[in-house]
Structures are given as structure tokens and as C-alpha cells.
Image (cartoon, rainbow, N blue to C red):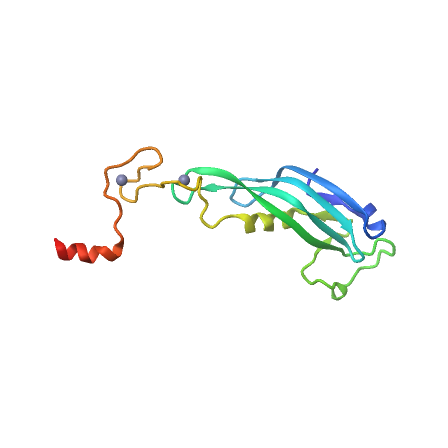
Length: 173
Ligand SMILES: [Zn+2]
Ligand SMILES: [Zn+2]
């Protein structure tokens, strides 16, 4: 199942009706990055004003380790919790004016009653991306002097000195 869901039927159902979507695949095309995978279950619940999407999914984040620069893919758990509002009333076909939306941030369902979860999942993925990803917690990184990957080989460079000691060392020599 992909991230485009036709919700016309669900919108005709009473409040509390649900639809379960299983997502499992390379769903997110991203600019200048590997496509991200999304895996998990999202439940759509009919509310009085629209649909509530909830569930737990995992999204992949591909990148390189901030210490050793090795490319790797990690998974982040994301809790989906979003309200989607229809733009058009399903029964009357009337356009629902934005000022009637009680939640200004709510995403909307398009004129053909298709709910597109792509943008939402992209936002969740961005939020889940670590600022300084590590291939593993104890990654030794690259030597700042010779560039050796210290996870693989030890190099002969001196360990880095705290810059606060550099002036002291100059005084001593
Ligand atoms: Zn690393
Ligand atoms: Zn070195």
C-alpha cells in the first residue's frame, strides 16, 4: 500500500470508523538523497471534521557517519499523529472554506478525496534525522591528522591535545 489513500468511502462513514493502512516500501523520493523506506501501520479514524491518522512507523534515514564518513542507513521510530481535513464536502460537493478549519495546521485531503501522506512522512523523516549521525555509538572516527579510519587501524599520530593546553605546552618548550 502506498502513501496515497482514497478516503471517499471512509469520509461517508460515521465518526469512529477506521481504515488500517500497512505501509512497507521505498515510499519517499527525496531531493539529493537516497529514497527513504517507511514501514508500519497507520490507522485512519473518521472524526467529526475529517480524519485522524495515528500509528507507529519506522522511517529509514540514509546518510554518512559524522565521525568516520562511512555511508549507512538507520531506522527511526516515528509516532504518527495528524489531522486531515477534506477541502470539499463529500455529500454536497461544496468547498469547505479554510476559515472553517479549526486547526490551521491541519493537512488537507484533495478534491478527489485522496489523502496523500507523503509530505507528512517526509516531515517526520526530517524530524527523525539525527544532526550528527553515528554508524555506532563508539565510532572512533577519522584521525584529524592523517585521515586514517581509527575503527580499522590505529595510526601513529599523537592524540589530540585540548587546545587550552597548547599555550602551556609552548611555554614549556
Ligand atoms: Zn562512524
Ligand atoms: Zn593519524
